Every structure is written in C-alpha cells, then in structure tokens.
Length: 387
Image (cartoon, rainbow, N blue to C red; front, side, top):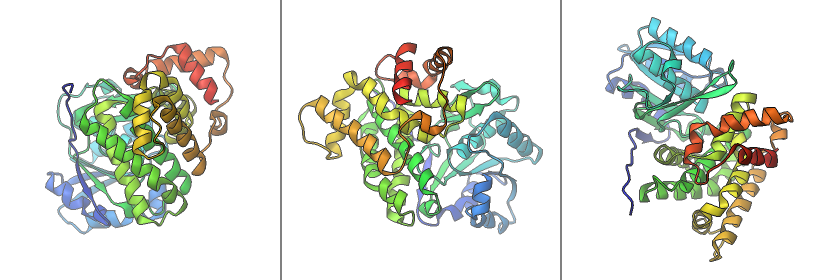
C-alpha cells in the first residue's frame, strides 16, 4: 500500500431540523458578529427565515445579512460582501445555500480575515493562517463545498473561473439538514446530484493520492446517489432519498478534496467561465465523454465501480467499464438532464475559440489530477463530441 495523507477538517452535524443549531455552534466557535451569506431565492422561499430567527432570539449575537449572491458567484459579489462584513466588524461567517453561496462565503472569509484584494489569494495553498470561524449549511446535494478546501468564483470580465484552494478554506462545521432540500426544484436536484456523481467517479479515478479511506467514500457515495437521486428528483418530499443524496454529496466532497478531480471538471470550469453554464449540468454533459477518454488507463477502476453498484458481474474490465459509462448516460436522461452542450445554450465555436477554451481547460488546476494526460487537441475532441 502506498503512503497517503487524508484530511477531513470539517465537523459534520447531521439531522432533521439541525440548521436551527447554527447560532449556538458559531457561539461555540467564539464568534459573536456573524456575516450571513445567502441568495434571494432562499429568502423568497422562506428557507432561511427559521435559521435567522435563532440568531434574533440570542441577544449575545448580532448579524450582518448579505443575500445578493448570484447563481454563479463572482468577484464583484465577493468584494461587496467582504466590504459589508468589514464595515460591520464581523468575526464569523455563516453560509446558507448551494455551491455558489458556499464558495462565495469562503472567499469572502479570506478577505474578511486577511484584508486586501481577493485576487491576491487565488491559486493553491496561498493561505498561511486559519480564517475566521465559518459554518456551512448546504441547501443542495452536489458540490461538496460544505466540506471541501476549495472555492471557485467567476471573473466575468476575464471570462474564467478563479480557483482558491487551501486547507484553511474548509468550513469549521457543516450542518446537514435534509429538510432544507425538500423544496429544491427537480432540475436543480438533478444537476447538483450529477455534480456529486462526477466527483465520485473522477476522484476514484485518481491514482496518485488514493487510499482505502477515499475508495470507500467514492464507492459508497456513488451507490447512494445511483440508488436515491432518481427518487429525490421525482419525489422531492421523500426525506430518506434527500438524506441519502445529501450524505453522498458530502462524502464525495471529502473524497475529491483529498484526491482531486480531472478533465471533466476542467472542461466544466472553462465552459462555465466562458458561457455561464450551470456547473453540475455542464459536468453531466461532459462526464461520459471524459470517462470514455480516460477508459484505456482506468478501465479496472470503472469496472470495480460497476461491480460494486451491481450493474454487471462481467469479469472483463473493459466490458464492465462500458456498462458504467452507459449507466451514467442513462441516469442523466432518467432525471431529465440535457445530453449536449448545445442544449445548454452554448453557441457553436470557431476554431480559434475552441483552442482558447481548450487552453483554459488545459491550464485548469483540475487537469493535473486526470489519470491520462490530455493535450489541447484531446480536449477539443472531448468538447466536440459533447457538443
């Protein structure tokens, strides 16, 4: 067995109605002036109101509320929230929302703690100290941002996604409350669920940093998603299905934080940065094509997944691996996700535009973990097959 390092710095608290404990948890972390980050959709749906009430009832706590995070968090939003937090003297952060909100809050916490321009801290391992206490409450089951040590925000002017990665970015506590998912629309349930599926498959394909701990997280996380995602999409009030997808997404988040992802995420980041496509939906389109590209070097890993999921008992690794790829395609269709980039509103690209997008993907940090080396031309080929 190769040596490995495994980190899971975030404490996870799971249970129905657990979100109501956020105020007490932040108090326990030493925070008293809390920046609460969310979005307008959750305000209008009433999801965050009961959580806010817990803070209002505790006279020892004060809050500064920022709810203008867009569906694809960007630098402008982060700077605005950070300025508000600094002005109000906040010493802790609570993020309530999907991946966009959680990622924005993480980057806001960098600026709140360290000052300066958030652009100064982009990249990997550019943080040297702990940040202010942060609690994450996910309201989708997909990104794993509630436990991951990375964050992505969009630089609209540059047309690209900016990566922030550091062990200090992981939230101190993640509260998993499946009741918050009940009102999540089917389309978002499906898209975020396929993001988690992509995390499991891409992370399990990484060879260098794998360990028995990450293997278990990827395999069992994928099993829970295949078992429960269709039910959660079609019957959003099924709390058991919602719980399974939420736990699986968090498992996948811990796994890819320790392992990395690959070419599918690199392409999704590049495409999302250029065209503003939803991250999970974009991953779902690219996933089978990225898997096919990697097949020649990871067929045994895909085959292990297929057999663990009881999709096949074929002893031929390539045959079993192809069964997994076919099932991924079928799952996307079953839960109503588009199968082509053109269906996401991505325009047909000229050759120079294709080369630019492929170059962005080829320089994305996710690509370094891909099990098979990918050239710009290889990436263009995957893109064209997905279009």
